[in-house]
Length: 74
Image 1 (cartoon, helix red, strand yellow):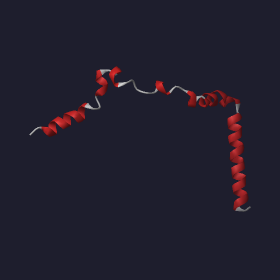
Image 2 (cartoon, rainbow, N blue to C red):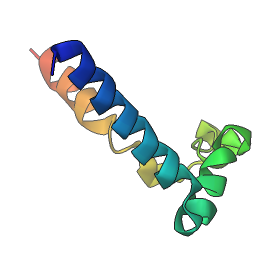
Image 3 (spheres, one colour):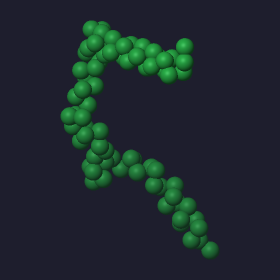
Image 4 (cartoon, rainbow, N blue to C red):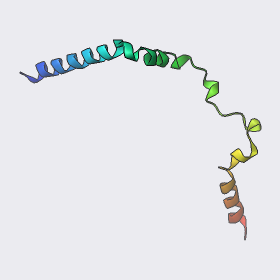
């Protein structure tokens, strides 16, 4: 068996396996939920605007501000 024939057989088997997996009834609900991902509302994943955030949510910026204050001290 040559490399070309082996590669063709391998790709054909992979395609048939993928085709079976997609059309398998057990995967139907999961794959249908994946189909709606592009249509989902992206606003649900975005963080709220800065004025609507809680005051303690700015903890990430506080250490750098404190470092700047320490560096500017003589």
